[in-house]
Image 1: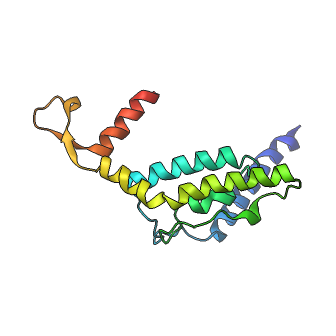
Image 2 (image 1 turned 180 degrees about the vertical axis):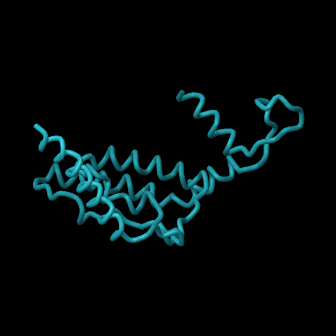
Length: 156
């Protein structure tokens, strides 16, 4: 019984030591990484595009094939085409027609991407608006922050 009590702390210390050694060998956090900042139009386009992609290409469980057309890369650039090499292969005339229709829907969204993003950005610019929630006359709040706070209240 006495030996059992001594082994447990040593196992715990050994595990803690292994965790420290593994963490010491890990590369540091890259604080120089450049992440492109998008507009509200970019964000809404990405949400709509992801939803459309998940609907029409339901066989792509990870969304890898349409990720590039829905989200900008680290250089801030969207892909122009769905990566069909990441989609499973189906055989048959009906499957081929279904795939072509799905890709056509996403292609149409991609063709109008610039106009859609610009329209949302023009309709909802990030300007200061009066903030009635503050309770102080003359206080303003950026529109996008007001929208964020409003949608957070809706979901809580």
